Length: 373
Length: 83
Image: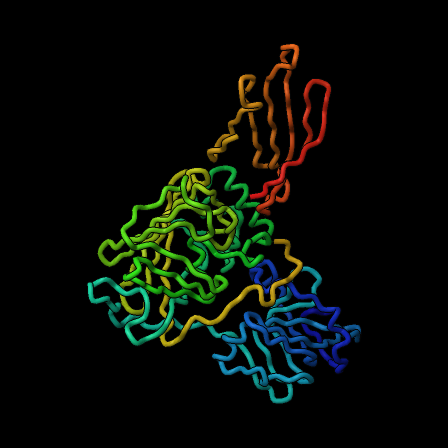
């Protein structure tokens, strides 16, 4: 079968649907797709699966030998597509389309689309657009007591949604090349990621060589630690000074939340904290920076894409600074003496998405039920 | 057993007849060896050894699977992490 150009098409209907294979909605792109295998598919749409968070279309495609096969083509979040003008009715069963994209790993007849063109009109229905960060012009909003607001200005709305880095690595001059899922371009660069102890280095290498397929995110588990600030659908702070806490609402973390206590209580002792995905957090302001001390983490999550290990001894010190309306600076110090040879620090910035709310995202909605929790 | 990120230390048969447990982990092969010196019911020194391999490294419910030996008695073991 020629996978670089598969032409021709006959409408067969849904009978071939059972031949296509879908992988989990939540697995990382790297685990599911092979970016080096480009594909162009031309065929007739047989089904549209317009389900948040990942929409699929199914199409019958004739291969070079004249045989028909049904393909599953993933083409993005319906909510994101709607923002770009796509509607559920933009494509109909029976339409002939040309898809450009990349193939899934293995033999599954599945692709991720980078463009969808309607053959009858030549109209490009879909091409993912990177979100443009807002310009950093206005001052950060403040509370009456002078503290910087981490959320919207009074009467406004928005959320934090465009991280400058998708992966946590140590802040050193020679940053290793890796993709957005944290897969190193060169496995020999492991020691540029973090100061691993031998077991942690070996485990990180195992996860990398395994193409990140054991990522707990793939089982719809929460993105604990720094990863919660790198998820695709952003996050929001809800500051409740009268209750002595700040809630962090996660758009991409299965729409759950984390609590940062700001009521003056002392930092928790790791030995007494109940292990959890988001830990036990205590925050205090140091000038315009919110400093959050957290312990009490379970080992069941990856604290960033790419598979950085940690233990229940993990202690995080996070620093949040909003230098202007549109920018949040995030810095985290990782202190886990069982996993790393010393404390180390990484960070990135996140851009404000004005005038929008966090969108709905539930990983389980179209996750693969075959996952063993 | 206790693990500090570098070494695993432990005690076999905690109590009046306890003995220290030696644990060796090879991260390149994920193999684990445990041994301890103890005494049998007649007070004779006896060596207890176990060798295994970590399986399902990527899973929270990873396992240690292998064989144990005490004098001329041997057997299999499997330990699965639950939490």
